[in-house]
Picture 1: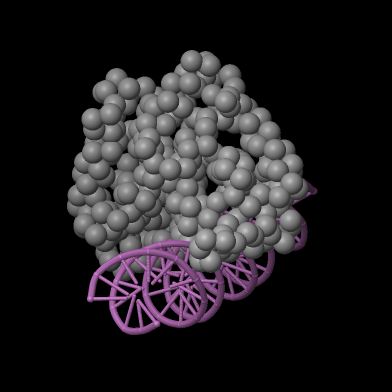
Picture 2: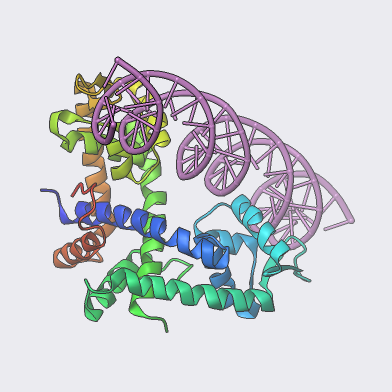
Length: 148
Length: 148
DNA sequence: CCGATATGTTTCCGAACGCAAGTATATCGG
DNA sequence: CCGATATACTTGCGTTCGGAAACATATCGG
């Protein structure tokens, strides 16, 4: 038998793989968005003025800066997000959530919450789910990008 | 505030992203292997006769069959794995762990275990880690591919 | 004010992936 | 035995990603 840390790590990887498989399909077919796109919009939703620089988004999404550039392009064409300049610093190109984006992310988040509830239904008690959320949260405590 | 299920789901995604960032670098520099390659070898290590068909590997690794074909090619050139045919079914092309592969995966697993221990050190009790492993394990219970 | 350095963004390039198509083999119904 | 269907694997194609390079702008030391 292996150490508890090792088991937890392996189970973490496996659980995430399964979760992404399961979520990607329905989320895409219902709202036309990928999971990571919904997460991007959720970060904007939570940010002051509903906007973040691309660097800030990259850190919170754990992706590279170039990925943020590519991810925002189709969202901008869809009208979910816009681009805003900073009057103090011309290097910054904020990604800002539009009203259409707010409606879309609201719907998508509701779908995500329902899928999350389905995922845990019938095999976990409420207390266990809360414990799981807490223990996992400690892994990323002190890091930016918390949405919960 | 959001529901516990939703928080757990978001924290799960974030924790995995952080974990992969942290593990990929050291694992690659120490053993020259990617995390997913180590997982592939670990599956072989645990399998009867130290071998699995590519389809079986694909299911356990949560990747497509073509990915397994591409992943095994460099490992075969390195001498970590070999190819074996099934006398009963000529369609099958088993991936089999060589002796060199057994030594390599043993070392890599030791590194992984140490990194996993470091990851949890100082912020989790042994009991909490065991609880975490158990709760996460339930997410994938009944599925193939358990390594813990 | 100006060079040196740092930072934000985009573009280019190579690596990795999933899916669909192609090939080979097995199995099943007649 | 043989066509039809299913399965295992490989290959080609389009997509996505991270890192390096390019570029614009900001900041800092003199």
